[in-house]
Image (cartoon, rainbow, N blue to C red; front, side, top):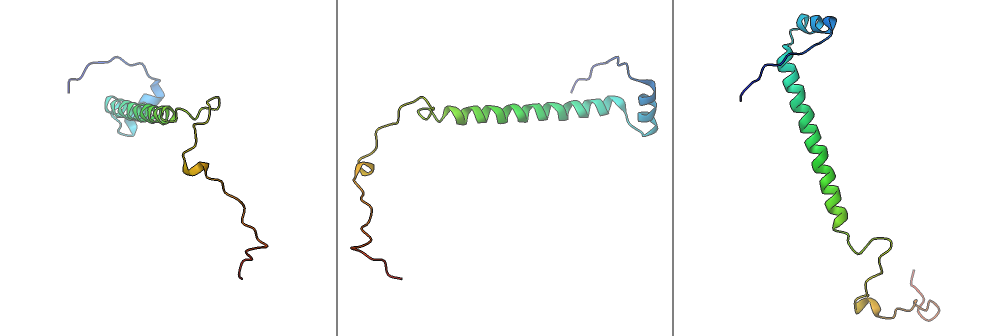
Length: 89
C-alpha cells in the first residue's frame, strides 16, 4: 500500500504524552481512520438494509387499500354455540 506524507498540527502536551506512551502517531492515526471508516460502512450498510426492508412492504402503507382476501379467508365463521356444545372439563 502506498503511503503519503502528511503535515499535522497537534497540541504539544498531547504529542509528548503519546510519545511517552510509545505511540507512533502516524500508525495510530491510520488505525483509527480505518476503524472509523469500517464503522461508517457498517452503519451505512445497516441503513440501506433497513430501507430495503421498508421497500419490501409495499402495499402495507397506512394509506393503501387492503388487498382482497383469499377464498379461505372469506368463509363464514360463527362463534361456537357453548350451550349446544358444552366443553368438557
